[in-house]
Length: 186
Image 1 (cartoon, rainbow, N blue to C red):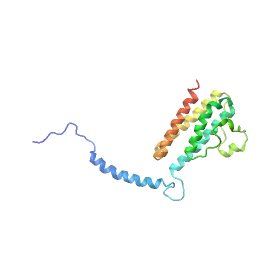
Image 2: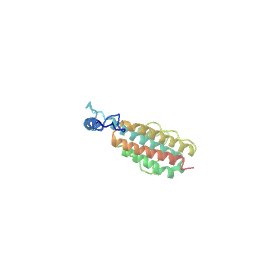
Image 3: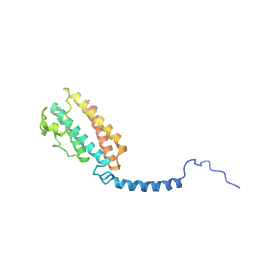
Image 4: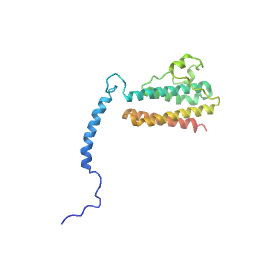
């Protein structure tokens, strides 16, 4: 007498077949990840890896965002107390990505940039003009934070684990900054 088939019979792959395929796949992934984490591409020409390029871009983006905070504080000194902690966080993000945290964490101690100063031009692109109204300046900062957080979230799929976790954490902090710049001030 044969036993009837179980009503819970699976139509997909069985556990053993998945294990048989997963083990070699993990081994191959582990081997290839070791060579990619060496800091250079497999070409050996001294080019940085994709992760190193993403980390450098994230550091530059954070430094540029800190410069925007500086410009808003220079244009609206009354916002210095409110923006100081957010700017300090942005500088810590730049340092976490391997960038140099320029200046002190307190924007009130830094000199205000002159429109034709060569120091601003040497550090990156021309600074964004600061709106005359403080609320508009805060809205522009929030938009910059949101755009950067969105870009970092999109980049999560293209970077290895540790950098992905750091990008996710910094993107979440950027989203919190957006809230603090927009909703908390109302």
